[in-house]
Length: 443
Image (cartoon, rainbow, N blue to C red; front, side, top):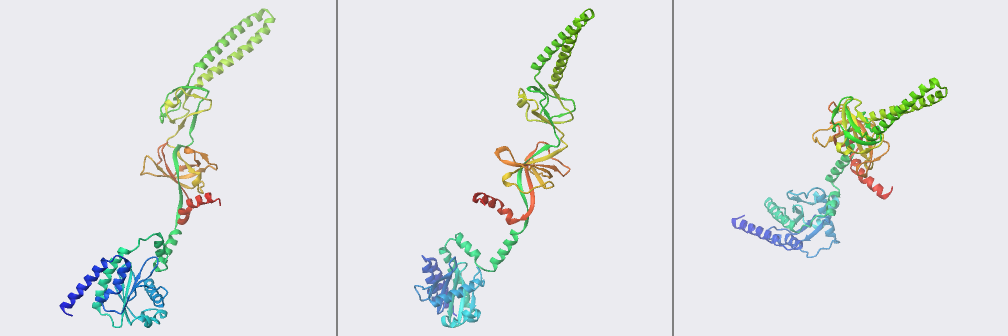
């Protein structure tokens, strides 16, 4: 082939590619591909196959309108579909020479009725494929030239490629094939992969076996003598109740006791000389004992107004100003005496996300103040009844003891991850949606 012929072929190639880029519709571009390509490549028949949700033949050489029910169209569609399912239309694959023997028997029997002996199949990128057929075999040079032309046509078809919606993507993924079977097996294996069921809950570090310091009498707190989280020793003063009323009662009882004692002394002297005075002395003795008991009881109550620490530890309460001058009733909790070396974890498991937990289960605390630290604990108690917590939610209270040597600081707050049984990953992912659907549907 001379230099002039190569120049004409190059000019024809550039002209066809220019025409393809200037096409205003997919139909016009299909006409160019199957008809005007004869200016560069000699062939007798040509067809274009488009990929998508509905895969079909979109252009045939020599025909302006296509009839999908025609036998030739139906046979050609089966050929293209067979080549696509066989993996011959993947992006980037080179052209392929086809003959009747390369097809299944059912398709090969009708080859001579519809196509010449030699065909050339060329991919158009991801948009489809192009089939050329003629009586003479294809040379390597013609094959390379056709591949370059097909590459340009495929790029031009991208302009008219429909945007894929979820239906097309679903159809592509659900289309039977080796890749889909592998993905299905991988999805089934992933869905059956065991994973530890867990739920997040609010957690707090609480004292273990704390001593509750309650108001010994009903009254008003006069003074708090310690600060929150202060260490105290046994006998240290903690808080005092207002003694104004009780001090007056004690003074009155003491005076009544003194008056009864004077009356008893006078009766005792009179009883020495008068027999009738003995009866009065007995009455005065009883009254003296009554007043003495009342004065002694009031004195003991006055002493109880000063609350001291029964043992060493740390006093836990909110703030001095919250209690200063506050009226309390007998037995009302004022503060807690705790040992900071003996702490445990309290967690509130939301009732809406409750899982099967039992003593001995695992729970991990992630403190808010220490994002890089975590503490493992073992559940020792599980409340059988949910109670209202902050926000009006219902939650089950869990108590757990820390298993490691290092323990968090008393009063520290954080997020607790409560672990349950091992379940498949599909159950872990669909547990909450299924629960919501069951509550909504009522089954």
